[in-house]
Length: 189
Image (cartoon, rainbow, N blue to C red; front, side, top):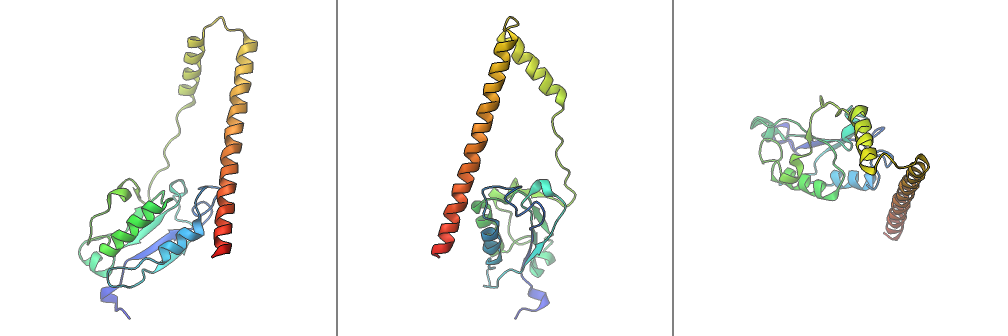
């Protein structure tokens, strides 16, 4: 049993309305990821405590994980590190390695995690203004030529729309196949 003076790192993992859902972040086995995060050990062999949070209020950064420093890390100046877009195994592995090496305050942040650092006060990036889209469409229309008749333009627009729907259906079908393979893997285990 550890005393407060040598408490390990701790994780807070967002699993609310957005983080941890296939609707917001498709193609990720969120429960398997949570289980993997719950199995992280530090260099002394202690399992890192993991707390499931309903919402950390930066949903646009889903999946969000907060790494609290160990007692020694905090004493060395470590502060909580907020990570966003933790959606693939490479990032979970880097997080595991970092905590094993000491985590915040004791070990440098691994390269794969650097682009994922965020904060509880992060602001959602603004969408591009519609004016740019309108200007882009006008430029495309000018490039096609002003003499193109309206019927041809409408049919090409319908083709693009149909192509977009077909790509979307293909992605959804692939995600469903992936889910089915995962269900089969879990049944076999």
